[in-house]
Image (tube, rainbow, N blue to C red; front, side, top):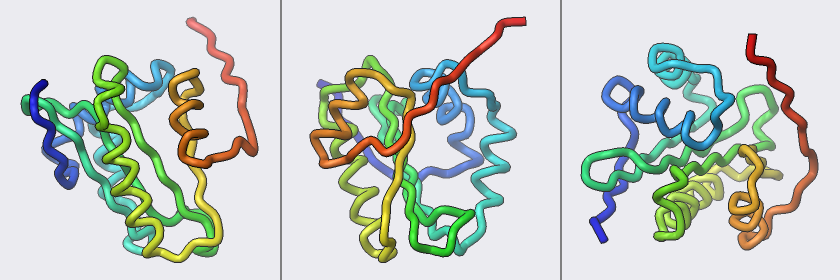
Length: 144
């Protein structure tokens, strides 16, 4: 198995690959590299956001973003882990998750939330780590 490297995300360098990962894990995502990069670099310091990429053979196959919710009072943190479907079940998500939780715990939030494109694999990953579903959304799409 190829070796994995985890490193901090560099928005200017990684935007294209992160957007490809977003599409691979959420095909209805509406974004592009310029929008993602702007959103990431415009995130205020008060969010205390950390972002890491997991690379295999120089290609980003997973990411974690962890920090305080931008629209709250500092009591809610967000944790987002993504691993492309063909790279799952290799420990990549577990290691990214560990790094994200480690950071979130330093922030002292009262609650932590995450969102993901629901799948049996994603739900199993969350439940195995003690997460509970508090809200589900149904996404409707239309191809014009």
